[in-house]
Length: 271
Image (cartoon, rainbow, N blue to C red):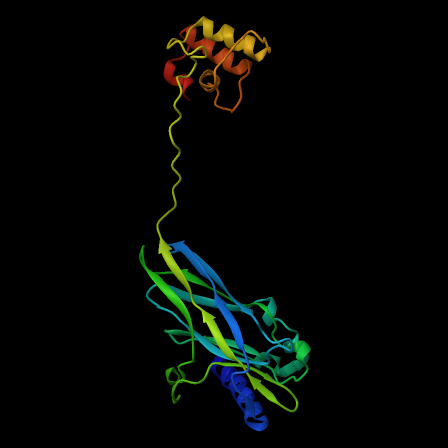
């Protein structure tokens, strides 16, 4: 059924072009395919964005995106905001033939075509598609996502490769636009790990005399009480944060006192 709808949409676009004559290579439509790096087995999602679309828009689009099936498995292609023009609702029963996609194992085939000549229902700039799937290759694998002509021979009874179509089919004329593709990719990377550098602190040594004793507790208490004569260096302030909450307060004094009273160990000050 999906192939039938694709064939129907292609035929509708082709008949319109044949009946009206084509102005070729009028301008470039820029097609940018997104890139993403994911872990093996993880889901991916990349957008296909259109820019430099003529003001009137596009009524017929037919192209493919090539990829390596050993690296990714494509599970869905959905229309983005630029592809949801209201044409499907306007066409009624024919709306089901407006957009479809097909995966032939090497290419993601994309077809969007409306018979409406009112350009308010045509595709404009923005996100046209979102391609999603799963990374099935190995770490370090990468597949390029390139815009290409559809390999019609991949279908039973199909012929040679077709043209890439970005066209505006009006009531009295048809304009074909060339496409300038920016390739995307999906890469498989390893798990991302964050390494935190060890803190260079002598926990509890507020006065930085290489010893943790009552003097450190007294100095820290005076510092917290904003005694202007209690001078604590930046290293001492770091050493004082034995509760590791980013501040110096009475909780730190209490914990240092517990060490001085041999209730906890020096290792506990570091926790």
